[in-house]
Length: 329
Image (tube, rainbow, N blue to C red; front, side):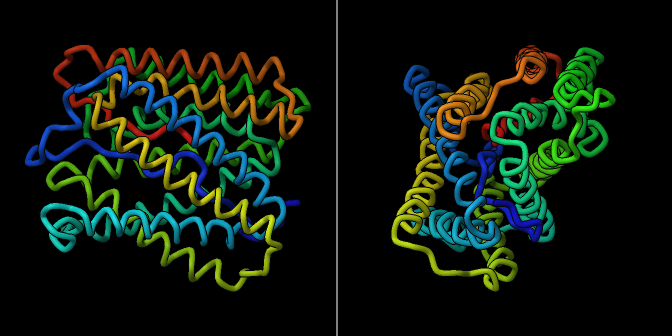
């Protein structure tokens, strides 16, 4: 059941991306300690994100999603506050930032993205939504030029164009099968790309922890104001599912943090695409979704373009690397 009131969802997978570390911070996320362990932690993280998406589709179909998102944000806010309290420099120093207005904008972008992607889950399913959302890393490349002033090579623009072609293969406009709901994950991908680029902008001259902390706290305040009127009672079974869902959202971010402690984010990013595989399995086995051939072909084109763009980032071109993002939710 989908209510066209802002009924959305919990954090879908694209969780809060982990930006690059500031130069003044210890380099535990910039050098590989245990690459094999880091890879398995990433696989576990994206599998957990996929499971989280499965829960979000059910909960958003049964209850007003604003309520679900609000509670999800409460859980994540508690998580980042706990992390702040454990920071060696002290919580006040850890969260200090001169870019609070930018963090406010990022928080709004992220909340809106979550709303749109979960709305997409309930209207066109997990598989179709994730297939379109996979274009997000390529949109980050495209936006890095005008917003961050980075030079984008023609090879990267070609990768972006190929990714958009993959989206067109999935959407199939003009063939009588196009649905406006398919634009929801595309809009969500654009919003998350904006969020990620602004994350890079805010972490150019200050530590990254505030960029991780403030979207969780500001988002919790924002969603409380929006979602509290929709708070409703839940039977014990669904309360248990909601508790598991919140636990998964925290556990997935914990796995991602541990992953980036073991291996450079750029090296492990290709494994983030496994989330589409896990989501497809969940969609088919639990929600009886169908993987259509155009969706499969379009997703493969998008993934191939994304991996090609990622391979370009590993080459020494004198450009600033694209900051890694968490797996597309």
